[in-house]
Length: 284
Image (cartoon, rainbow, N blue to C red; front, side):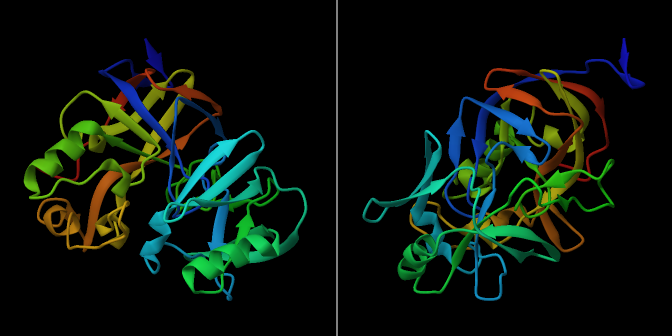
């Protein structure tokens, strides 16, 4: 048996957690299942805060964004400040608003500016003027063509629509740390169980349900991983430790960026079946 010329099942894992992050750099949501769209999981990073220059705002500059959690009730996205449990509601599928150009790293794309009172709510709590925008369906932000196969899209993510990390990788890292860190430091969409630490480095192609995936690039990590997602406090870890054994070309890697060849639905408990492998960049 073969799939597109690749070897059949090499080994299997189980999907143990699925997460989406409706607003870039705010708290994520654990879900039991998620629909994979042409630009990533449904609702994942379709909203984003921008500054007065229409540039993306993240925990890199504002670690206090960790205090904002997200939840979906009906057709609304609720954004809640954990410090006082005050919330603001945002329509999940915005249909009205001024179209503006926004910047995410070196990319520029179109976004819809949401109601001013939402931006004012955040601005007051961050002590900085920000606005909230939504990526409508007609906004087409493409993945880096160096790694894309068919002009794949992404939302307001840093660069790729989906990130995967194995439970064993985090366990191995925590064995090396004086103070263990939680998976939310790394903001994956898919977490899987089984195998050995960093086995995801060797994934080339795999299937979950009817969806075929390609692991196209290790994920370079930044200062956000040093931010405690409950307190907003920063330390040197885990980047200090990861730099000792997960560093290449002055970047530190943890997890794999994914592209999918079609849409579909993914559920916790689904099998992850590896179709083909590649050589890891790291020796552990």
